[in-house]
Length: 484
Image (cartoon, rainbow, N blue to C red; front, side, top):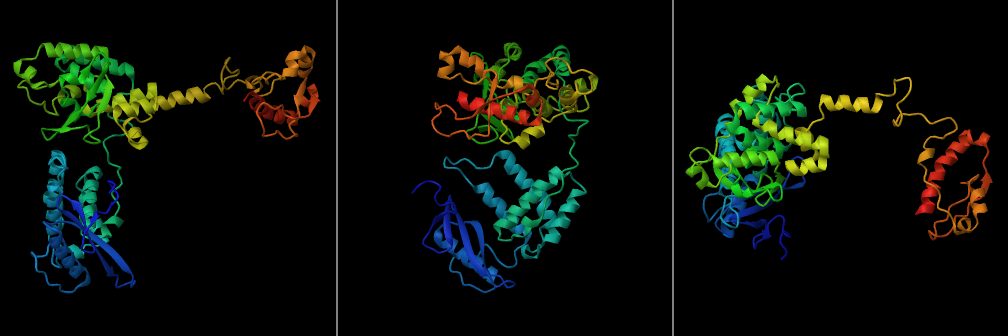
């Protein structure tokens, strides 16, 4: 059977039970809504040792939803009417942490496992854990969200809300889907403090300061700002990832909670191919020349003094100090990635900058490479700067046509000469004083066939009129048709 055909799982011999692999089963139960009288489908994903155990869990789930007792010959039902949010959340976490790939590796990265555990054990369970899962309604979830919003940033609260929605959804409770996240209006990235360096001249001064005052960090900072790599990816770079012959760096892995994870952030097989600038390569080689035996033995491009991974925060103080000297409102190590995305977009366009930054959507790329005040000012000068001057500059797109010249007339391509005109120069000269009468239809037949349009003389008087301007516009289309 073709891979991916059963998107809801592989059917089993038990109705309403499908296998997802690795001990996971999808359970489906149809129950009647007491308010509308219509049947509604509920589904859950559970862990079970066999199809028989999954069938018992489905029976318990059906009993819970319909409010009837169902005998079970297998283990105690996982789902029951007295379950609390804490029970369901911890079961959900246990299921996620136990998921494995075909090669036996965990599906969740160490950072994700840590983030899930923290959200459930430190946030969801202490605040909602004692409530019965069936007692949660939209108003309760919104009050919980708003209470957290008074204490944490919206960018912190919204992922917790998304996790609660997932927990409730897997438990067959859809009320969480109707609760929207908080509006993200308290981010530290603003127009006044965009956490990047917009001006290339300021960036040049910043790099000169790094070279002079923090030479031990020049290679790593240069790598970050010219490649746009994430910190977790740059820290995992190895010496063999640098390919000076091709002028690129190939990032193949990243760090997650001090563990190496294959692939960059998008997937386990994704790779980032980024530029290797000549001065950066010189700084990297100079740093490698000073490595001790442990550093060389690690194979890492930027190891710590003991040969391990550098701390993610090792650039915080140097960057803060230099940014304060240059009066840059806010700049973090992650801001160097934003700087690379912005400058690449300005010089080479979004397609190249998105490829280097590894962005998959325009929305995310606009977040990293925003159109700042300097670009907007330059756009205004380019488009409207000459409109207020007494005379538009020569060659400007805002220049008016000369007297007797129609707008766009100079850009109309010449008509393709016919074979008769090429044989008879007199006929060709006569054709220069005539125009095509566009009231005649243009045939859609063979392209080589001459158009059957009536030819009439054009006088200077009619050329100045509106009718002739319209015909002159259409003449361009006729000329393009004849050239095709």
